[in-house]
Image 1 (tube, rainbow over the protein chains, first blue to last red):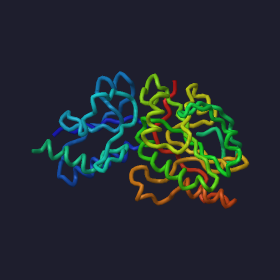
Image 2: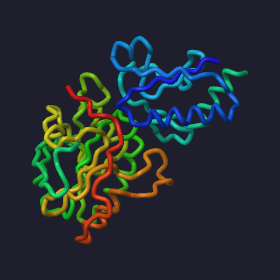
Image 3: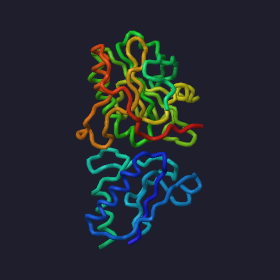
Image 4: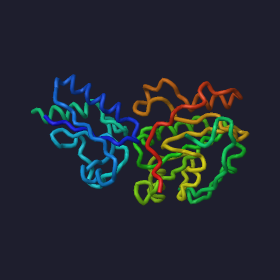
Length: 104
Length: 177
């Protein structure tokens, strides 16, 4: 499994996001390395299809596919949680579901 | 770092609001406390906190507190933050406070605001009494351990010093032109 963590330095939660990803991976017994990419330019955001920080890809697939009207940008990412609230971080369950989906 | 330090006087502004009216700081001169929050539409930190902003205004309105939100983001790069979209957001979320557009970014620059949301609380003499985050948990309202802004408001209304006068604002950077 190939796991990629993309972040934008100005968004304050990327460290918490990476810790959350690592924690869920440990809980799920996923031992794949995490490629960490710091996105620094608009061009890089376009090239990487970076819809905000943090973005997590599993085998190249976004754990929360961006809606059609989203555009790549150097910004913080909004995740809609299971209860409808907006958060700057994906929930542990969102990460867990994506890991399990790629494992199956 | 904000340009204003604790104890500094509020910097006057006059900006258009989503209600079609012009709003100035002077409009709230009769309030016991004014909370200026640099905000925007697109930032997930704002979106995580904005219901709490509405709740705080609702809880403190009868105590002489006025909350004012200001968006200064460059809408050409972040269309979600356009004035038209600010009007939509205010309507959708039922904002009970003025939501103002700082198109030139002059107010945000003068205040030295850096993030959204970023709180500046002024007392009835216009002195800055608290600067920083709304509380200590953007993600889970039920897990908040320190309600920074509410604590500061309670202190200011009781003519006391807030227990914490400054915290690091947590949120997206303001999108400068």
